[in-house]
Image 1 (cartoon, helix red, strand yellow):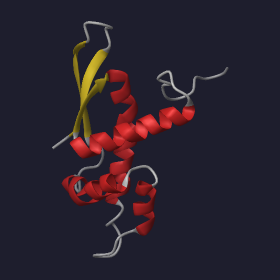
Image 2 (spheres, rainbow, N blue to C red; image 1 turned 45 degrees about the horizontal axis):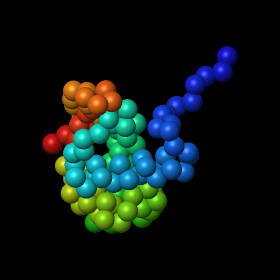
Image 3 (tube, rainbow, N blue to C red; image 1 turned 90 degrees about the horizontal axis):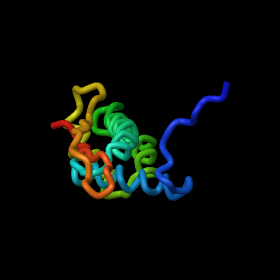
Image 4 (cartoon, rainbow, N blue to C red; image 1 turned 60 degrees about the vertical axis):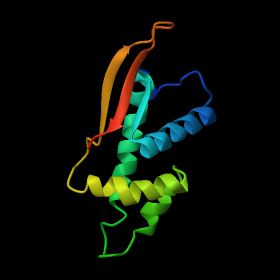
Length: 124
């Protein structure tokens, strides 16, 4: 029996969708709170949680030394300013927390098209 593939298409081609998700992830890291549709919020949540976990590995080695492989893995997905903010400000906040860095709060529907809206934010 064939199974469905993971993820949503959002009416875009593969490259457009990847770029769209990268931009949304970077915006969430910059602003720490983004208002978007529920589908987009559910799609971006695991991506950003994995990025924060990778960011925690940057300083997990020897005292005072950065794990260059972890920094490069983040740089492949995020712009340089987002990587800097993630490593310097966001990762220290979640040093003792194992997952669950993001919260999705459901909002009312949009009146025009009925899209279910949500706020996706980093947990304080």
